[in-house]
Image 1 (cartoon, rainbow, N blue to C red):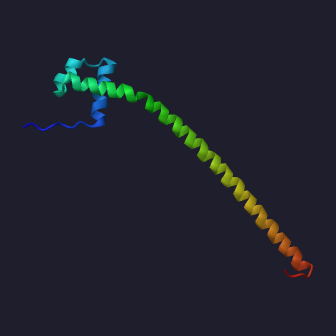
Image 2 (image 1 turned 120 degrees about the vertical axis):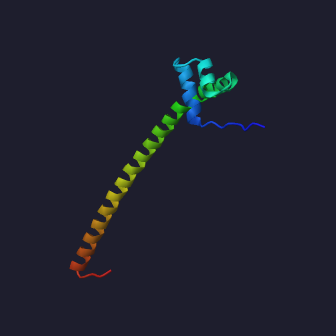
Image 3 (image 1 turned 45 degrees about the vertical axis):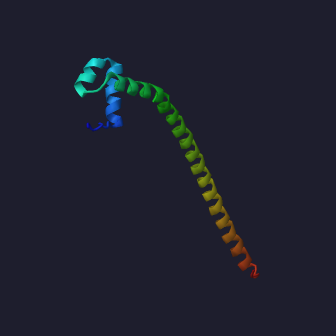
Length: 103
């Protein structure tokens, strides 16, 4: 009984890219790596089917980066508002103590 070989995603993509770029023919790749043409064909189909997802991911990253930037701006604004409120509170406390009134 022969063991099934397992191939990493990196290896599969390397083989498919060599095929698509014309660097090597299907026959050369099959001989070199002891693969069947059907297997390489399946990898090629999977590769081409999943290719659009590579570009979709970058859009998601851009949306996430925009959201992060928006949240950072909001944090900055709220931090400034808090500092202003603290200063106003200390000024008001100082004015009350000068007038002789205690809260």
